[in-house]
Image: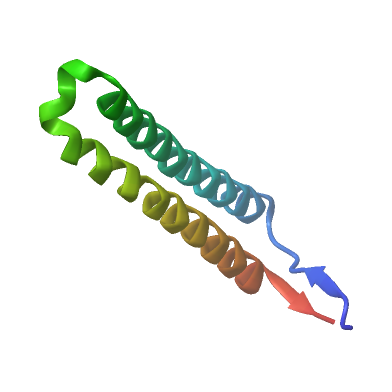
Length: 91
C-alpha cells in the first residue's frame, strides 16, 4: 500500500486546513445536538399524558431523529475524506 505524505503547505495554509477540520467537527456536533433534541422531544411528547393530542408529532420527531444523525455522520465523513484527498498526496 502506498504511503501518504502531507503536502508542503505554508503555515497559514496549514492553519486554514486545521480550521476546516474543526469547522467540520462543529458542524457534526450541531447535527448531533439536533438529533438529541428531536429524540428527547419525541420521547417526552409520547410519555406525557398531557400531550396525548400531539402524539403524531412525537412519532414524527422520533422517526426524523435517526435520519438527521445519519445525514450528519455521512456529511462529516464525506468532508473529512475530501480534506484528506486535497491535502494529502501519495508518494
